Image (cartoon, rainbow, N blue to C red; front, side, top):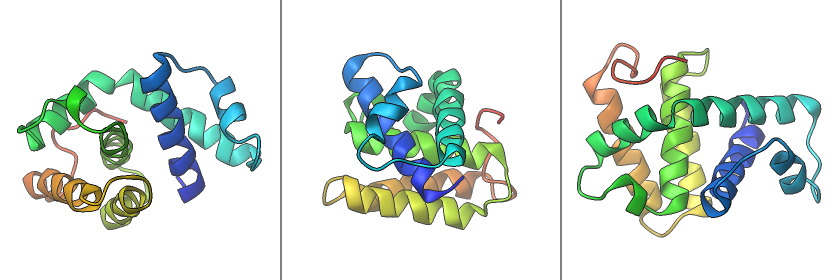
Length: 142
């Protein structure tokens, strides 16, 4: 999954949280000013639909590693960055865990609050510490 697909997926998930629904036309709407390739579009749709299929389990993982705040009270940006990263960690693709965490931290720095990057990095670090082999023992299958 590339950076462009992650950013667009984050935007789609953000829009879904605000609007209450997602359809693939959201990808077109969000990329209208800056068109994306067919590959990025397909990767974004696959990522968003995969996350939405496993959203309850992803949110349970977030809640386990960030128990102080209910998932629905986390900032929309932080919550969705964590969903994207945890989903990718669970898929066990060829992307190294460190790359996924670094990308998530960078997204949090660019789109979140002043403390988002530290929060996201801490949660994802805890997830990996609990499952050092794959970083995905308690995560939904990809």
